Length: 158
Image 1 (cartoon, helix red, strand yellow):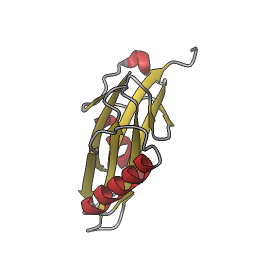
Image 2: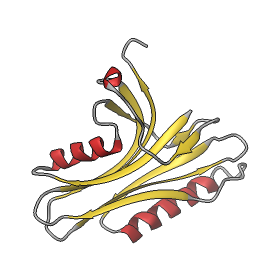
Image 3: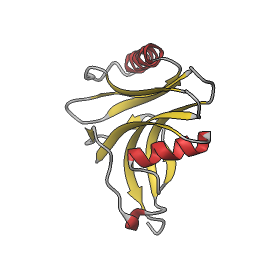
Image 4: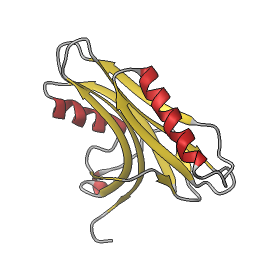
């Protein structure tokens, strides 16, 4: 399975509009997102680009791990990030998602969480921690920062 990890930031007249703009930029806006916990199935490949969906996917179920932070207060930052580790032999792995108000906070939380999770799974030789973070400062309109790991799009008849 190919898991697409992508990020975006947006500003819009409302928080929800900023969220939708981020979904558009990440290539996942026209799908019903089903949030997953943090397990990467064996045989997976992480691809650092937005997925490509067309009108045939409109309204599909999209399985995803998502971090998103919205902000409406002027001069306050919104940050989101996803980090991961994998087993190079099997492709299985772990995702974590964090939201907050600074890049350092997000990176530290991702690192702490993954180190803790790997410690409970010490029987696996995990890769180095990788991450994608996204941030934006609210100026005069609501903002959203988002990182999405899009797993798979399925129609409703499956």
